[in-house]
Length: 84
Image (cartoon, rainbow, N blue to C red; front, side):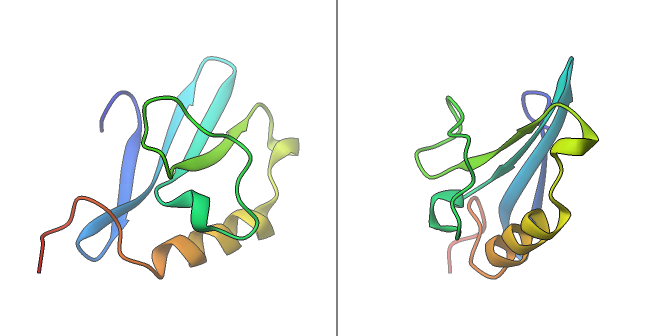
């Protein structure tokens, strides 16, 4: 947990984060600027390449698109891992 966001990773690095807030849920992808299509939200203070979504209701959820982004972001090295 960092700033109210849970960070998740694959291997040695972080690849996405999520957090619930009053009125919305955030799902942010580390290195999200490289995803196809690029997620619409550029968050403040989370790094230049982070992109994501802010969902206000279950109706805003596109499960197929989110699954595709998670697959893409998990297939590349995350950040914060041990240097090899």
